[in-house]
View 1 (cartoon, rainbow, N blue to C red):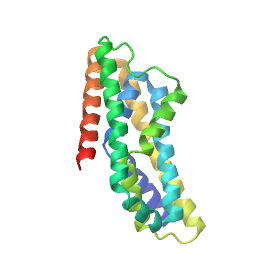
View 2 (cartoon, rainbow, N blue to C red; view 1 turned 90 degrees about the vertical axis):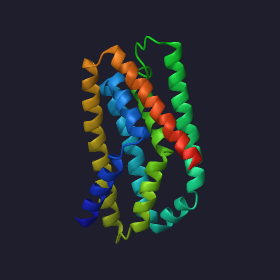
View 3 (cartoon, rainbow, N blue to C red; view 1 turned 135 degrees about the vertical axis):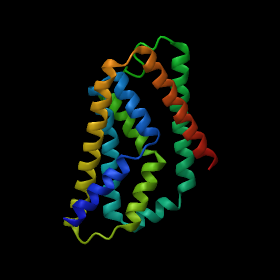
Length: 198
């Protein structure tokens, strides 16, 4: 029970952090609707679940390995986030009407996109490295309970977040969508620049 509770708390703490992924996820849900937003959210939750498995199985060893490569992780993340931000801003520049910004692509494409973004997100990696370093799970039952807790918490949070944002998008005007798209991309670009120089 303690391991399950620890997993639920860790999953919520990591999922609820506000960063580049959260901003992009909210924007994608508002613009593309709740169905594609939910797929994107489950892409994020899948990575959280996978990292929880690594943290649960490898424990402190995983934390030490990740901590030793923090600079490389930040650089890769800065490049990926920078490309996403610039690509999005360029698309808005070419098409100022913003008919369906980032709404294109299938449900599967939204899932894959956010799975990839989250996998290289330094906030997620560093958070799970910290969790892994503090792990002292006793046996496979506690490991399974911890991983299940993280998975349920992350999936639950992203379900609520994306459905709320997706349904709110029905009342958002094109002008507000454009502002959200520009603001989100600029913030992501700022995060990428901060990672590159930190």
